[in-house]
Amino acid sequence: MKSVVLHAIGDIRYEDVPIPKPNDGEALIRVRSAGVCGSDIPRVMKKGTYSFPLIPGHEFAGEVVEICGSPKNDIKVGDRVAVFPLIPCGKCPYCQIGEYAQCDDYDYLGSRRNGGFAEYVIAPLDNLIPVPDNVDFECSAMTEPASVALHAIRRTGIDAGDNVVILGAGTIGIILAQWAKICGAGRIFITDIVEEKLKSAMDFGFKDCINSIREDPVERVIKETGGRGADIAIEAAGTPITFEQSLRITRKLGKVILMGNVSGDVIIPEKTASTILRSQLTIYGTWNSSISAVPKNEWKTALEFMSSGALNLKPLITHRFDLSEVNKAFDMMYNKREFFNKVMFVI
Image 1 (tube, rainbow, N blue to C red):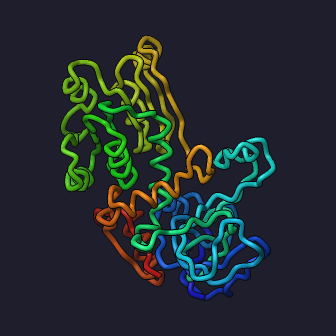
Image 2 (image 1 turned 30 degrees about the horizontal axis):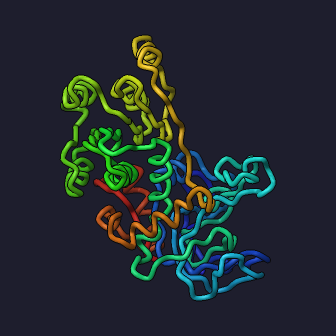
């Protein structure tokens, strides 16, 4: 099969490898679309995977072509599926309560074992989520970021009319804004330093977009909310600056959700630390998503909202590449040769 293989940091190659064979409890998936996550860029170009050689890619969807064993979830050959990339151990205390994202000994498609930047991939049957007929492969390949965003939103407990600020207008930021709107948020502020990203957010109908280079987002949000600040702030950019801003932009007794993978050390000034205490902020961390049936399978929920049209992901795709163009794609993204949002491999 054709695949993209990472042999060392920065050494990614388009090459032929054998089609893998599923073991008991696994399926062979014919990958049709695979998205590039923001985390894939440093993983390929700066940090590496957990071992080499390895096929990256954890945002993908495709068709089931072979099943080994008896599925517990009625999955059959020919089904169109999205694939939950985290493979839990099933034994630790967190797995026992269905909190698979907190597993003590998990595996992961695309970073710890071969992932979706290939024509075929092996995945556990329990990790396959059926895709509604009217959701195409490109959108279903974005179930992972859509579910990650939903998980963060559910951590916030957004109530009708809440003023929400999202720091970071990338793919996740715009999906977060859509979920916030679906959940009944009042005003939704979105901040970023890249004008093209803010324009993308405005194209989705979000008008309260703030360029943080041109004006102070904290001052702007506090002013626009009558001096109070946002009810909920979601840090989705992963920078020390936005991390600190999220703490100052939130009203007294408000909530802060820290979502972005922070690059660099975060130093909290004394005044900001005092704000956390005096405002009695509630700060949440969030990571990954949930496919547990209780209380809610976030992957099924995301796909249902895509199917209904309430969650609109297609316009987020700015680039489409063939697997053979992998070096061109990662050079463009890593060196920021042009504006991009969601980059998709069409396989």
